Length: 597
Image (cartoon, rainbow, N blue to C red; front, side, top):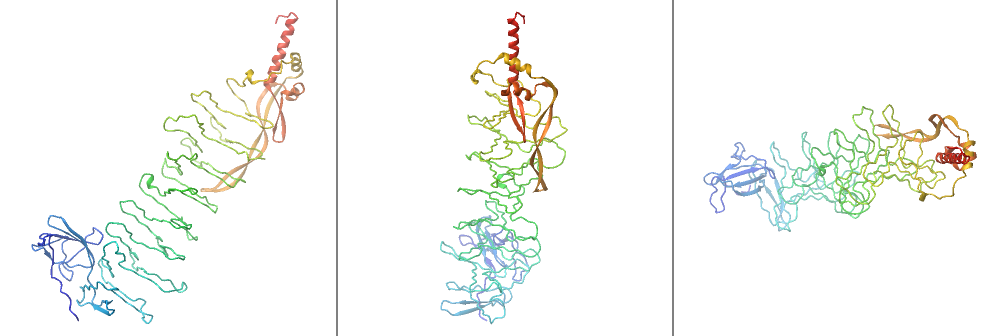
């Protein structure tokens, strides 16, 4: 047994002038933390020191430890002298270390201190400090096996690399798995971690201590070929994650950060959920208890570039590409879209259905059979600036357009309203109110041109109006001369006047129901067929028949189609003025004969 350097019985500390650090304080923590770690006054670790250890009148103390420490030394006034890591110099009596000296010879160092304690072997300047090599002739599956039997905080292996300077690259532990293998007989790796504890423990733990840039764990895949920079795999029963990221610092950062800078297609983060083992999303984002837009469960930011959205959702099955759901709040919205003042795009939201053969582009539905506690509105379109908005450009609350490429349809409607509500005070198919200090206000404006028959307004039922119904300005008319007053009288007298009940004919939408799967089951969506129906609009009304007027005044007649049937309509305005012309002729004739009328 060879000798070793005997350590001092007590540790001695001095100040910057070399004088004993009388009353100094030595704190001991677990490395990289503020958690205090025990030291002892004796080698057998039976009598605990105080923490901090208070130095005596000679600046000394007996300090025995176990493992690695963060040591903080302060003077009696509390001024910091140093904050350093203290390496673990202990070993077991069975430890052996082999190393290659600069001359190429192999040396073995054995522990000489008995159980506990150990030797510090300085092997600086050597090309390779420690070497352990085994071949297939060795029965054990490993070249080195380290066991630390303890119930205290300690490590089986502690590797520390102390290097400074810009060129001091390297690792405290460097593992390399080289050679070849076959996936049929198992896999390999540079480092394998496993834990067999029944309580909480990690197979591999990475910790970046102190301040400065760096990572708790860094994994890279540099060579060509299929593979991953980081691969997380979770098997077995019990809750857990393949990869779990946790962020607890007060500075800006992310629990998981993925970045793609390659030249090939790919994603900064890719999540895939396979097989039917149970319910679960490919990505689950959960934000708890923090307010503000920056604390969203999911935030997607598209910084620059064209042709790609911040979020792209693509559904290839029967489920929707995006489903938004809100609960537990009277003011929360399932979807909220906002284009801020920096956006000059003409459109904030676009919904497009490229399959134009059939279907609905946007469906708004209020569901739930329950007593109403307030107004129920399926869709609201509002132009409501928070301050006075001026300008000559048009402002439209809701614009509906059917393009000119639509042709051959049985019916094309810019807007179609079906109100089937019942037992209420009133119901409106469409309600238009204009209340503003404008030059001209139109409650409802219709313009129908270009068709065989054009109806700017078509009403089945009574019509109430106040004010001018038809403009009569000469500048809007082409004059063909006065009418034949005597003929007007003959036409009026030729047409019988009847008393009748009047109906209006119209084509009614007949629902043809189809099922579309919805979140709450099957959503019944109507499509429509058509059939002719009639509606009673007047009882015991008097007037002429269009067929009689057609014989005397065919110009007064308009033909209109309801389904496959052509009906006749009389211009009440023309008939009224024909009656006025007949009355004028009759009065003038009587006056010419000396009758005082």
